[in-house]
Length: 171
Image (cartoon, rainbow, N blue to C red; front, side, top):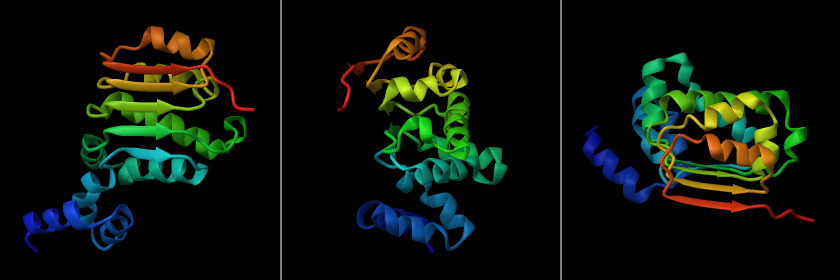
């Protein structure tokens, strides 16, 4: 298969679901499909999505593959539909792992959205320390903020070009 043709087809004609199915057919296609799976950012709204994405990034513990996957990771919308305090230990561990790996390898992660920011950042102090070390964040949206969020904003090392902060509460 000519990979330049394959890339053209993937870029113009496949949705994320089709790309995911194709990536399961062989190791080479799995490696090549990463840029299309992560294109446009990743939205994590369900506990199982958080866990699945962390496992995907972990990439069979192959550091080279982990780095290649992070190269295409440009945006994250983290907005759990479930009450953050009731997330399973596996989901909480997955969140911490995503940001821990990201603080070391996410040199292209330019957009981050956290909602509810205060609840997410209050889960584990390590989570905040990893987020402030994300090197490339340019656009940050934090909703449902509080003191922990404002502390994190003061510690950020990235050169933000856009920030949206809201303290609204649902209900």
